[in-house]
Amino acid sequence: MSALKQFRERARLTQQELADAAGTSQPQIRRLEAGERKLTKEWAERLAPALGINAETLLFPPANLNEPEGDDGPGWTIDGEAGLDVPGEVAAGRFLTVDTAVDETIYERAPVVPDSRYPRKAQYGLVVRGTSINQIAIDGDILHCVDIGISGHQPQNGDLVIVEQIQFGGHLRERTAKVYRVAEGGSVELHPDSDDPRWQEPIHVPRRELEWKPREDLQVAVRAFVIGTYRPMQKLLRR
Image 1 (tube, rainbow, N blue to C red):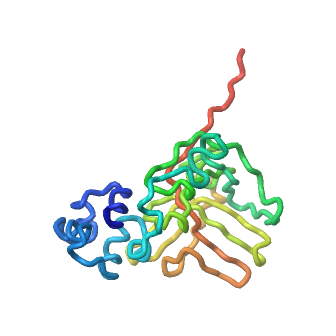
Image 2: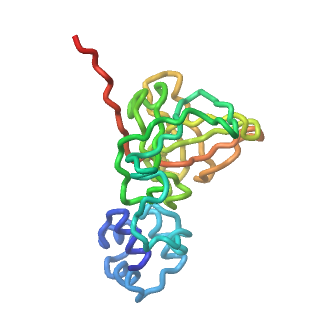
Image 3: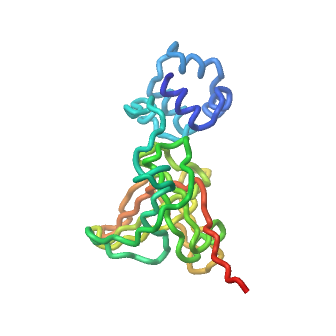
């Protein structure tokens, strides 16, 4: 099976839907998948955005693309236990001291089934703290995240993404969740989705980059996108 077909099926698109998104015809997609037409750099740049990946990933797919999704990494089972790893939190306005030995709280695994469209090792959970995205998720909810670097998928307009801001050479880190919004001119802003007046200021993204330095002592990076939320049931006191 061609890489193009596999990425299309992972994106849950028909050949016609992919053709419409790329401004071409269904027979052209069929020929590309069958190897009757060469998948050139130009074709990859047209097709990749609709597939949620970058052109390089489409041209040079990972070596394990043909392998079935397995139990590699923090996916459905780890050490015989089910769920997703939850290695930390998202909390606006809170910069944590990054320690190489003790980083932050490690939570119990979340009982969340990984999404088969993405590598299991790319999926993990983060606990929401505070009100910075309370229009989407509230304090205590768990965000189901997909790592951008591992999955090869790029954030799309309207996605909720995980953003890290790192200060002072990596000694302080803030991890937040923001909505990825693409304007008509192609510029990108990362917006909180909250009714809390403290969290209304967007982050402006230069040239649609995923990692940049707005100033010398601050680095900003979009690390993952969110595909779902899980809300643990609160314990109820019996009367």
